[in-house]
Image (cartoon, rainbow, N blue to C red; front, top):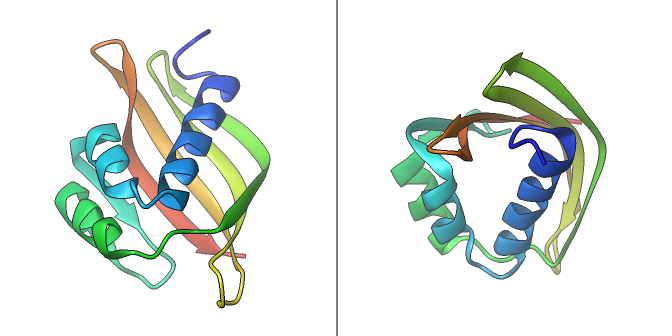
Length: 121
């Protein structure tokens, strides 16, 4: 399977959400993100890899999630963006719904996250 295909990147995103449900997002995203990667969140925060790992180490787990409407936007032979809608819930909180964009680039044979953005839906 191509490292930046729709199937492979959608599976990688689900691995990330699974890690967030197990409170292991700090480790997962600490490994997945490139050293200069950024995450842009719905509240306007722009976090680098270290800040993402630190914030996820303190975050409560998601109890469930659903990813839909996945689309691949090729960027180059070794890079692509995955765009999708996410709906996630934490126990006792209102559901979170947003459009997500994750940009991946293949480095050393593996897709690595270089940019992630959430847009309120």
